[in-house]
Length: 354
Image 1: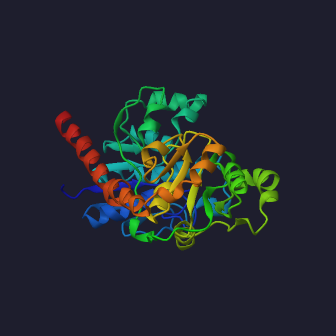
Image 2: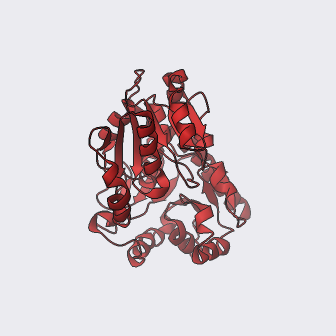
Image 3: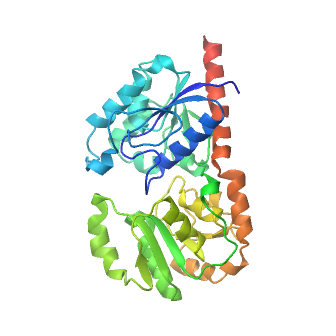
């Protein structure tokens, strides 16, 4: 397709890419780099501590999370989004990853906006203010990151496609060697399944290595429920890992455990593990059934007992099959292909209207 002038609107909470944990910002980084490589003129609206090949416009010197700005703060994110939309005439299209703020400002400019919603519609619809926002902007073009995420939206929304999140596969070295420990990676909070993973490891008497970020809001959960279970030998907490540490953890594992207890809209850690050749055993919730091929790249189970039984069959998984699936469906190249088609669709409709 012809080169486009694209505004890529990230959130100001984390750098792009994040130095350690961060899902949305990592997806934005991967998409931005791939679009720039294809010749598009991309302007990334993110914090100044971001690293990008695109033109960077920053409202704040560094990620708000790093300065302990509370999530309840709305003025800073609004200033960040405003800095993007006051330049709207410079772009063919604005790609919004900042959820509701982007939807709000999109109605005030001529340039079209497409929004990738990275959250959970099932949870959002339970919050009256968010449900009202979704209803108000139900006509705005939305991209879902899994079919399951889209299915859970009760409000009738204007979905223009589903594009799976993509990773930079080259940054996850493949290993055909079967590891000798289980691993868990993510944000240490109840719904991510950390307690269930520890229970499975103890049931099987296998080591569990944990890589995780602990947000301030989750400190009580960690201190009261998780910390006492970490013995430093069988159950090890490695801290919040950077890219290299994450790849090392995943590559050396027997399997990644992902017993999520919520309808997670994607779950980037699953393709990251599979890219290394490491099978994933997950609860069959959210997008997990779309990412994992049961019996080929891992197992989908319903409870702790099922997860423990699946680990005993993990030797039947061909690690090369895990890598191939990620290369075919969850690479940054595949993701960029999907978004280019959506950009063209939106711009074509705009040309017809005008």
